Image 1 (cartoon, chains in turn blue, red):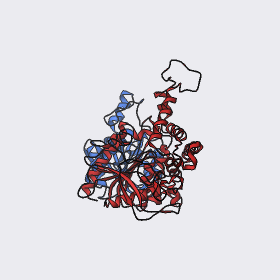
Image 2 (cartoon, one colour; image 1 turned 180 degrees about the vertical axis):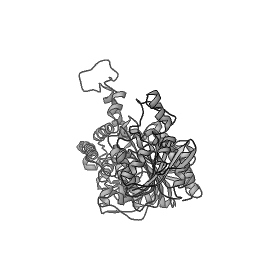
Image 3 (cartoon, rainbow over the protein chains, first blue to last red; image 1 turned 30 degrees about the vertical axis):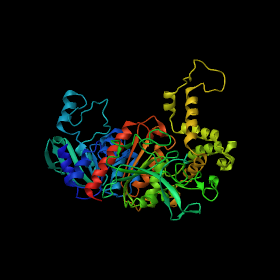
Image 4 (cartoon, chains in turn green, blue; image 1 turned 90 degrees about the vertical axis):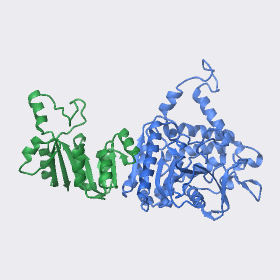
Length: 198
Length: 377
């Protein structure tokens, strides 16, 4: 978690306007507030988590990214962050499009379904993968649209979304993803972090 | 009512131009304060009361001898902690707790003003209370807070005085009174005016009081403050002090007895004409219309931080209407937080012991106070 926060924080310039979509209990917001910028908002669907954020004095709105991002004006944030939430939406493509409208730049992190540990579980155990990063069973997972680093990479190229930076994370090891190492990073990383722009 | 109460009061000598076109001056504003104003004057919170509220937010209300109307929220070690904050609350103009209203005595006639009182609006109420803030020499409030009609005043206050509050918390309210809201208010007004003792609003001249009408108004309104689930769980079809139905029109059911009681205690503390005037002010409230149909324009001058709160079971000022305020603020990039609190206590939730509401509100106010003070905005 800490590594992911550090990477995201390093992608953000100081004193910019940031929106964290699916901000959960506000841990990332708090981290960025202390390290990067005071001007940060959150959007979260769970009442309980919204209340936790507000209790910490964080500016958070209870709402659903799929329907409530529309109310923000175009390019009203320098960065919009979607941390490990994309796979939980009914329509991830629509959400990405909304994010790209609201933010000048968008940071998306995805738990990588192409990670070898995940692949091995399905291959050898023949069951849906349960890992540290994907702790749910098939019958209670909130994750509707799992994807791999490669899937997201290809999605961006097919939709003409510019990738400014793509970073792979394995445990605490950080490396850059590029076209030539894509297959390897897709196998060897548990998390992908993308800085994109429409 | 306001006849023999020793309330804190100031007289506003400057003329105040009302929305109806009339001008008032030398009029009283009754208020109460709790806690101490710090030396930087940075800890003041102005609380706005709702339709039947008054300046007695906390502690004992000297008129009713009951707890102040927002005792769950305001007081020592409460969410708005009076050990820390200086809390101000004024009776709205049109009210009957010492501020200028229809039961104020006209000194030239020695009689109550009655329905010669001018029609007032939420805007007028807020402008009058701003005079109190000037009198208290508070340059900038830390926060303006209120629920229901109090929330409408919060919105109007920030629109009128965009740099006078750092934080605004409108709770369970709307930016524009809906047809349903107006309908219920009209029902209440008609009940009062149908009472033969109303005498076109000059009942005090005849030593009369339209108690029956006012009680019916209160009973009808009270239902709108609750939720169907809340009513069913609390009362169901339970009978009042009897084992079987009496086949008559007495209060057989507990809910009937409860409403009759609510009506009867209300007439002891509230003036019927004030009820007419204040409900009218609420009905006339349409903030977006004041800004040519664009609610966002009401807030485009302000840097005030907003926190909007609604309740799941509030059907009088439902979440959708509170969300419209959030949307208007978001669309101009204002600083706004929002949560809908889970509660089956209906619109009244903001006045009651709803732990997640009290905790979220208190924590938010306290951590925001800390952040704002650290940043020295």
